[in-house]
Length: 280
Image (cartoon, rainbow, N blue to C red):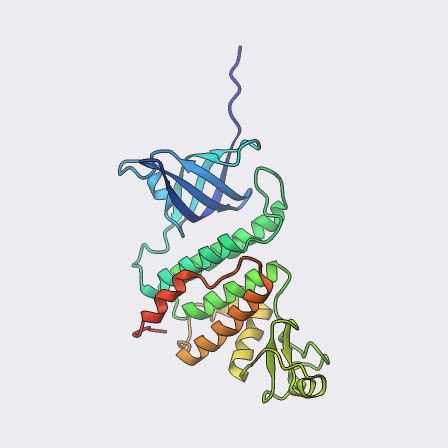
């Protein structure tokens, strides 16, 4: 009588989180290319000699093999290899903060239909994994001098995959294009879904939202057209001035907070508040 093998899967994945389990094991949350969000238990992975230990570090891109039992919420990690460690060339404050911030955002604000052993949209899963993998690879590059802008583009991609990307090419109230709008009086309004011109604010009393400057609007416009690619500017280019980082970060934070259930400012970004000597 033959013995039937247990179902298993092998796929690329991004390690999102890891929790201690027992004395030496760990529970790990993965975003996989082919199966969406998966939680696995890595037996004895926290022991120094474990072959699974390199596979549970958050932020790493890995190829992993795990059980695939639709009756289980927690699969078993069997093995794999590390494809990319974003901290291999050194863990700077900025790189660590933006990496951990992106992982927290992805783990807390998951788009619906994420695949997995219980079914889901595998095409959407692959697209989402591609975005995350692209972000990690760009962030890992030694030539990445605009980490803040890269992170903001990642936040934009998260909104886009929820179908909630801001409208920044025209006034959401009157429909006039960006070329027809005057920057003074322009506001960024999460409740309305994007930018509102000064004329509509005065005519309709749409006083919600926050003023937005021309440079910030240009950056958001680039994100709307190219997503996380940013025509290469997500990696190279002059560093964003601190006031611009703060303006873009605040606008996207407010938009995310209004539209995404479960969103909160990633705790890792608090690390940057003490980074007075940022190179960006």
